[in-house]
Length: 562
Image (cartoon, rainbow, N blue to C red):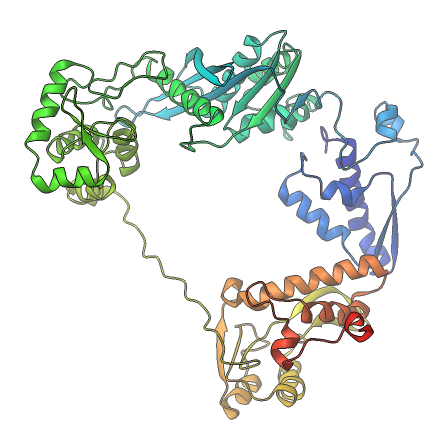
C-alpha cells in the first residue's frame, strides 16, 4: 500500500488484521480498534483504491461477528514510519485529501482562463504507422458571446501513445497558464484521474511499480508535476465527449478533438488515403468556422454534375432528409449542418479509394465519410460494399451467432412458479449455515414437501440451478409424482435465475445492516430481514409481496396504532 493515503493504508491494515485473526478467533466475537473511520473510507467517492480492493475489504469487514471501534489514541509506532502532521491526526476520513492533492480542484473557477485539451493517437490503415498529436484550445468570453481559438497544435513522434499525447497536451496547457488561474476541460478519464490522484501516488512510490521497474511515461509524469505548480490556481474537469451539443464546453472539446487529429496528420509519412477524391482535398486552417468541402471551383463543378445525374428517387430522398439546393453554387447540402450531399455514383468511387488496398473496416469508412459529407443510408451501403468484397469475406473474421436472451414468463398467480436457491452465509450459527435450503439433496426435498407445498399448494413449475442439491433422484421423483415442471439453469450463468439471485443479494444486504445495527448474529436478524422484504412495495405495481400473496397489506405498528 505504499503511496496511498494514511486513511487507505489504515483500511488495508484493518482488513489484513481481520483476515489473519480468522484462524484464531474461529467466528467468535471480535473487536477491532482503528484510528480511522474505515467504513466512511469505503463509501468515499474520490479514492485511489480499485473497485476490486474496495469490494474485497467490504466483504472482510462486514462479518457479523466483527465490531469495528474507532480509537482516537495515536499509535506511537506511526511516528517511526513517517512524520504525522496535526492535520493527519485529527481529520474527517470521508473528506480528507492531502494538501498537495487539494491544490487541483474538480469545480470550475469563475472568471478564469478557460482551456480545452485533447490528444489523439491512431494507426494509419494503409501504412500501419501510428500518428499522434495534441492540441490546446482557449475560449474567449466577451459578454454574451464567446469565441474559440487554437493555442497550439503539436505533432508528436510515432511512438507516442494516446496516454502520452494526453499528458503532453495537459503540460502544454499548464505552461500556457503560468502565473494565472485556469480551468481546464478534457474528455479523457485517464488524464483527469492522473492529475487528481494517481500522479501523487506514483510520486510517493518514486514512480516505481511493485516489481521495481519504472512506470510508463515517467518523464512526462515528472514534467506534469512541475507544470501543476506553474498556474496560481488550477481546476481540471472531466467533460463528455462527442455530444454534438452547441454549448461552449461541447464546442470547445469538439474543436480540441479535431485540432489534435489534424496535428497528428501533419506528422511525417501520413497517408493521403483519407483525403477526398476529384480534387475535393480538405485544406483546413486554424479556424472553427470553415465551410465544408468542396473547396475548389473544379470540384464544385464535378459534384454539381454528379448530383444532376442522380435518379429522381435519390434526389427525393435527399429532400426528405432535410437537404436543399444552395442558391449560390446550386449544390445540394444538408440544411442543418451545411454538409454537401454525396451522390451514389461518387460514393462508390470514394469507397474504392478508401477501402483499398488495406481493406479497411466499416468503422473507419463510416467515420471518414461522415466527417464532411452527408450520405443517406451510408451505414447500409458500406455494409453491402464490404459484403461484396471477396478478400474481406475470405480473411475477415465472421460474426458469431448471437443467441437472443429469453425472458421468464409472468406467472398466472402467487406461488405458481417457484424459484429456489440457497444462500451460503459462510459462518455457522447454532449449527446453521445456509438460508432457504440446506446443502444436501434430502434437506432440499424435505423443504419442498414440508414447508412449501403444505403452505402454498402444488406449484406449476420450479426453477433452480443444476447443482446436486436439486438435480437428484429424490427431488426429481417429487416433481414427477406431483406433475411439477422442473426447469434448470446453469450454475455458471446465474443470470438465468436472476430473480432469486437478486432477492438473495437483497436479503444478505438487509441481514448485514441489521447485524451491524443490532450487534446480533445473522440467525437472529433473519426474521427481521424477511419482514422488511415482504413489506417492500414493487417499483412497477407498488404492491408488497405480502399483499400479492394474501390480498391485504401487512399489519405494521403504524396501522395498528390507527
